[in-house]
Image (cartoon, protein in one colour):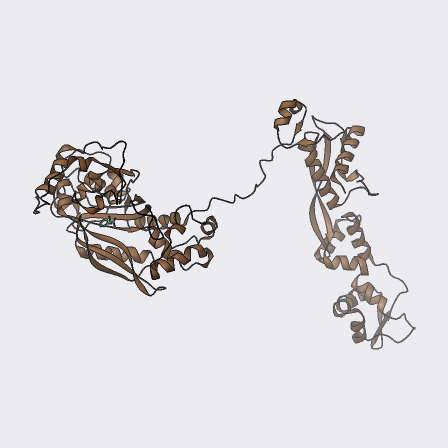
Length: 551
Ligand code: PHE
């Protein structure tokens, strides 16, 4: 039935009689009987809601309970009760041979024979004759069938609750909650249904028809279409997992928002010689405007320039002239160790005797850092700290399949008294184990700011080979002592690329084929295409489909 015809019927009825007291009295279009059934009330409700949304009507709903037939009840309504079927199958008394129970079973089926026989005896419809059964009466009134037919038709039973309760107990009928409605005219009542506009258009505004148009109400309850975008990039997922590992190990996150750093914080403070090739234009992006950074705190600056030029703290230094210009250049940080260095300098503030307030959370995330020897062993203001960061770095690389000009570094530093290389190695093993990498190996390496330095290799079971995953070391006294750290304080630090473990982790997942291929190439043949992971060649579909759990 067209819902418009029904809406029209409701409006016309209201026009005639003001109120529709009971929607069960309506005779729906193309029907001859009043709409007493559950289904017709559902149809009416649809039409009422549609009219209500235009304020053409108002309605109240009333609850009723009606009854419907169970599948067994429906069968009885159609074919008669079991006892009636048994009665019908038997010969009349004196006409033909009595029917044996076995024959009856064959005739009406097991269930009907079983249930029907007992009931038919109770009703005195059948009697035994010899070994068999015959009809006891010439005609019967199958009350169950008649009752069920009435329920089927009206949803109710005139003979009352008791019989209904019995039918429910016999699982022939089920109760169903229903509704009917009382309908009144609404503020916009009219017998003609205006077409509702869904959008305000430029034409309506130009022609002025918007003034007389009726607009469809917004349905703020509607669920809406799920947005197609918004998937997290695999790098972000892995970053979150690594961040959680650090947090559960008691690390505090360092602020790393300064992409632009001075050469002082990126290199000099780390005892990277001013002539180091990494500082060349070919390797580092320098900022042209502004050209110079603000000067660091003068006495620290002096200690750093002195250790470079002349040595100190047991070091001979580089014995090369110090360039203030070189030190004050601005650049895009080439490693997050620039941020770590600045944080270590801040951590050493109390050791320099500076008054510091409110920096507890910065270094501890509110939790107490664990310590080997403890801060109480000397009254020099030192507090142990465990810090990490995961953020972007920039290098002036020629972009190709294996190099990007910007990527992410995962970095950590641990500062405590008397730390040894064994602490660094032990920590690495735990950390990588938490990332699902069990086999790690260390190889001596060189960094200007750490001694000893170790490259970290992890065994990749799928590739069956050792893969470099990070770089680490114990920061040199030439870096730590000018900051003001006591001599027995050791700081170990380490860094790895975020892209590398992300690619390793993505490898097993078939769902992101575009990511898996380059990993194999990268790690086994050295022709990785890192650009499929980061940059404009990234496949959106690959990102949407990449697995959520990495470690
Ligand atoms: N900064 C190093 C890099 O860019 C990583 C590192 C950090 C090494 C801290 C040692 C200590 O590879």
